[in-house]
Length: 492
Image (tube, helix red, strand yellow):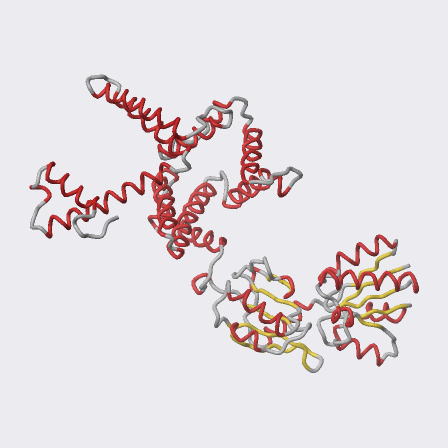
């Protein structure tokens, strides 16, 4: 019992191999993927009888159902006839969605497999496009995808791309929308179709793609786009730009930066991201996140020059971490709630770092975090072993206690700074238990102060007064008017 799978080639009968033809002649059962291929008519002329999978394509609800039905049909032909030959469009099994189902079926049936590669549809598409004036691929090679599987694929815009089997208007529209995420709408592409027994290419603008007649033998040749001409960019493009900036003849400022000189910028960019989030400005947020990503690529490039690590090591580290710490997704662990996820996360993290004492966990909170945020994180870690108040009201009593101790030190003690720190730590604890982020709360309070101060200044100006000439008592009275709204001005 032998199952032979061969490719019919990209279209022209002249590209149908002699090996595939001989296999078809010896077959006890001959099955073609589709009758809509020049080889089908040729086989008829040779007096060979065959059946096709066209009815399955038309009746299946999805590709999974189609592949299962095709595998079942082939198994039936094998059991009835023994020597069965399947002819697929293009180069054959390895470049086809039927690959996995057919291999699995053959193994289950105990059939011997004979795989005969055909002429590559990608090669034919490239040849036709170049004959029509398309630029050649160059040294970077090409990327090949099938129209049915483009979702989730990110094309390398710097390399030639071939999109295969664009079967119909829906597929053409989906391919167009996918490519517009990465290429300019007016980018010159080449639609390759079978015409008169040969592959012919037509140059069109990308945005015209969904207005072209296509079938399962249609391909699209997409030339690469130079870095300077792109409208959309991926991570690799950012790495390439950084390589240019840091490379020989690059930007003098970028070339002299180090991890230490860039340190301040990473902090600044992170805070600008927070501001964009608070403002609810998506355009600003995307821009600021890009600035943070630039810092990551910058540091990775510097490390690469020193032979320490590179951007791939950075992405590898974080991807491995996500896989390890989400065992409820990528493993056998269970986490039904967000709280369960955090518990699992901390347990896995402790195991990775070899932490044995909770004090080591507290010490692991970075000292370079903003003080309020660091205090909150340390309190959260302490709470993991039950060292915590149950209610914010209990923590508030500690605030009052610390305030009294600070008041005593202000009267002549020498530990004002220490007691002030204790007071701030107690305030952070109260905020945390009340579900308030103390860092954001203080930011909002500062913004409110700035707004009220601006209103106070405007009111003083309106009444012919100068703040620096009013004195504290008068300023306080003006401030109270702003707070109460008695000034008639809009308040923060």
